[in-house]
Image 1 (cartoon, rainbow, N blue to C red):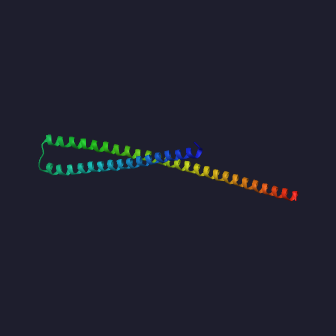
Image 2: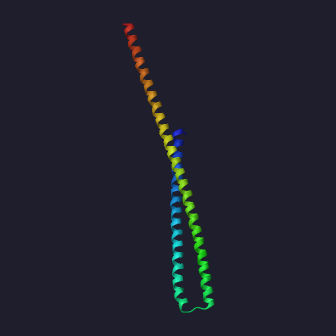
Image 3: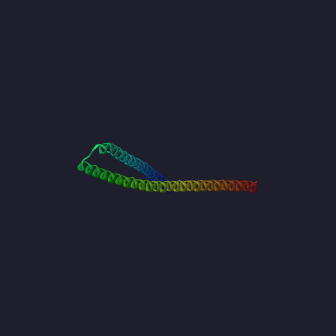
Length: 152
């Protein structure tokens, strides 16, 4: 297997890895958006829940109902805090995925540049061979012409 075939294989592999990293970043970004939406939904639910019970408390509420209300609000606050942590973790995954994608894009660019240099070197080699062949042909023709002059 020649070097250019190896580079083509390497390029294909690096492109696959870059594409996988791009998919990973997109999925991570979607996860962040979903986590944010869930957090917003929890905040909205807490707000609605408080408003509903505010009217109930203005009329009359027993201590048991008040305890249940505060217990539920406390669990809801814990869920919101937990969701905020999940959102922050998802945001960190986006940063890491973005960095992996950047690294993969750099690798693809490096292999592409190496391939271009290799192709340029091959072209230069081919041009040198052709020039050498042309020079040799010209020398043979000149030598043959001299030989014809000498024999005449």
